[in-house]
Image 1 (tube, rainbow, N blue to C red):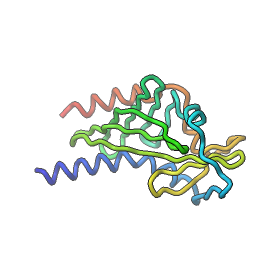
Image 2 (spheres, rainbow, N blue to C red):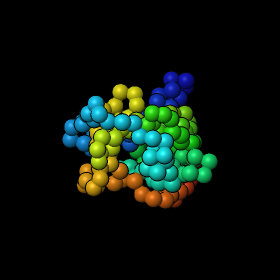
Image 3 (cartoon, rainbow, N blue to C red):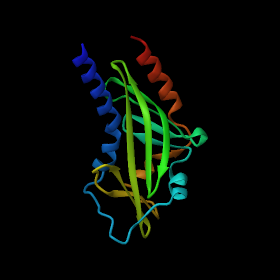
Length: 169
């Protein structure tokens, strides 16, 4: 039984991190920011993420300004939802820590992204060990990951449905 629970929790963590890999996989090749790039400031990161939803292929995450709450849901792997908070660290890093719930159990997860800017392009990479890719350009490019961000909470209704689905055991 312990092995089954451990495997179930590992599957939750796999679902949780799926969206992070979607961002880097969406880019045809990893772009390396040049040495002249600089980390984004806390203010720049706050403007990028605060009160915005990041729409994923099979879910979304919301970065609320109020109490820095982070909420998310994912339909991958049978479905899960996350409740936690997000925070900004220097230099140029955004993290979110949440407990993710699925029918098989729950598990905590910490996910962080670094951001650097060079000229009119902001780059992002998942920590640790992700590849840098263009995140946001000015003017916006069609393949910018930031195009998947929307102002407002696009998570609440999906979160409510996912909670109901998971609570039915």
